[in-house]
Image 1 (spheres, rainbow, N blue to C red):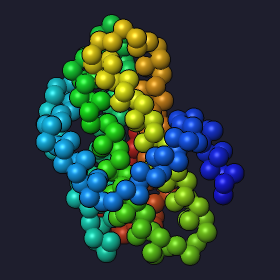
Image 2 (cartoon, rainbow, N blue to C red):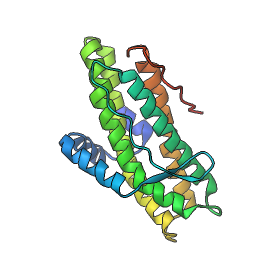
Image 3 (cartoon, one colour):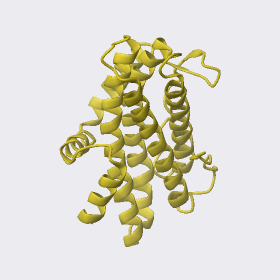
Image 4 (cartoon, helix red, strand yellow):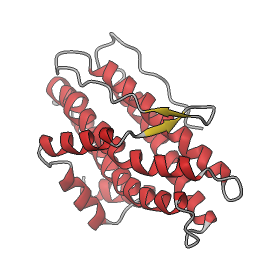
Length: 219
């Protein structure tokens, strides 16, 4: 398993092992800490852009279902939120270097890391736990969940670095290289879309079928 996880880290290339351990430890912070972070984030009136590039208010995260409720519906909504984020980041990448929207970069910088952490935390507590409780006897499923959790750690590390870069872009910091920024943005949303597609393929047959998982466009 250790070799498998190490290989996954090398393939995705988002974080060092030290960063992965630090991010993994953060996943086990008390739930109150997560709620305080999210409350502060919402009080700062975070906004995002729609597909037309207009700024609109952030509408909040999907409520977590009871473990006996609808984890599949929760996962579908969480995937929609992450795919919308990917689309916004792709718009920023496409705008580099000459047509960059500084305000959009600033908003993305504020929402990126807390959104990813909150959705991952809910996914692991509501969805993965349901799978573990109902399908945990299958070693292949246990290995799949371990891989997905590890990729969550990677993406959270990457989101932190990307947020710092987006802050600089929003502030018109000349130290940011447009080519490097575009590479980081595309690396992040490409990995995230691929991760979502993998989750859909692996989890949709395991979860209760009361709701359909939204298919990801991972091209």
